[in-house]
Amino acid sequence: MSKFALIVAAVSAVTFVASGGYKLIPARDLDASCTIKGNVSINSGERIYHVPGQEFYDATKISHRHGERWFCSEAEAQAAGWRKARRGEALPSAPSAKARPSMRPCP
Image (cartoon, rainbow, N blue to C red):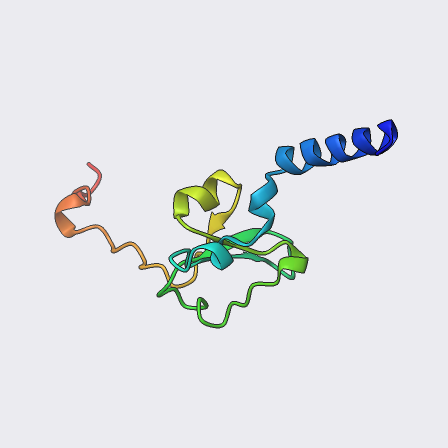
């Protein structure tokens, strides 16, 4: 093997490892417990993840060619810069009457 071929092979290996190497293989393909879907919004390009039970989880399809991927935890998705889908979340309940300030007429 020529010196040039060795240099090309070494640079390729370093680049592969530096880019995450094994992470190029979808996590779902390696571990069936990775059930969080990382979806790229068609309209905004925003990176959003969906967890099982959310409104659009079942309808969300992962397309690796669009940069979409599987995550094994919410922490992993957030660390990669993805945000949780807002739809399907439990809405915060209104504060109870005890938590509201009392309404007194102005003097």
